[in-house]
Image 1 (tube, rainbow, N blue to C red):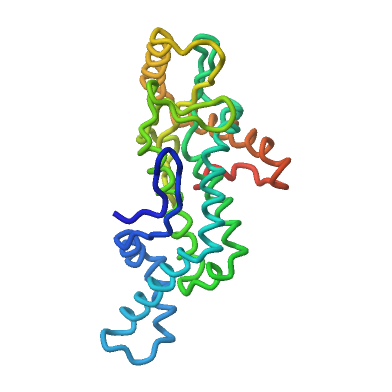
Image 2 (cartoon, rainbow, N blue to C red):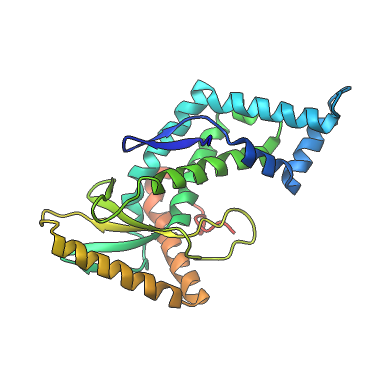
Amino acid sequence: MKTPVRSSHGRLEYTGRMPRDAFAVWAESPEGLTAIDRVAAHVGFAFFGKTHSAQRQIWRQLTRTARTESVAEAVQREVDSAINRLDTFVFADALPSCTVDLRRLIVVPRLFVNGEAYRRIQHAFDIQPAVRGLKGGEALRRWFVTTVIDSLATAVASMHPSLRHPVPVGEGWTIVDIDREFEWHVPFKGPAWHGHYYMLEMTRRPFTRAVRKEVGDAIAQMQAMLPQLSQADRDEILKRASLSLDQLFRATQGPAKAGRYVRA
């Protein structure tokens, strides 16, 4: 199956290959239909109909743009930084955590990680003429970014992080497990981005079988505890963590907008 991002030999790679089935779903959505109708209004005679012709034009332009060298380089930079930036999210306030063998084990909601990657890729696209010129307009650009982010998250999961095979990220941290289903919030629009990463701090202490078992037990306890959180508790965690992440990233990214990581 075509996917914009894949895991290859422990590295995430942007392929530029857009999934046609996902595009077809977008084309039938209210946003997609509006964008296609706008393009169809400028189509002359078309044997199979103006709508069909407009959709084909948008798809062909999109696939060419996704493979454009400057676009591919920009996305690859953001894909690389997304995984390396995970060690920053562990310092957000209020995230569920515990300590095992003097190692911190922290739950990092995927909506924070994906939300920051979305913001950065969207910014990178803003200075790409090929992306700005897509006939599908802003609706298609949002779909393009979201599709890349969803593919990125799937590629990380395909690495199958575990206590025996942790995935190193950033400085001194690893992903040791992934939850893909937990609902941190109910989105009114946009992607849900369920689940979270279990991030474990790596130290010089030996990572023995006994320590792995302790960490595994701690993860199991967290998995049992998190569903007991009320929606108000989850919202408070997200709010506090989001505000602190704004401060963490502000120094290198300029003025931040509070709550930007929780996409409603």
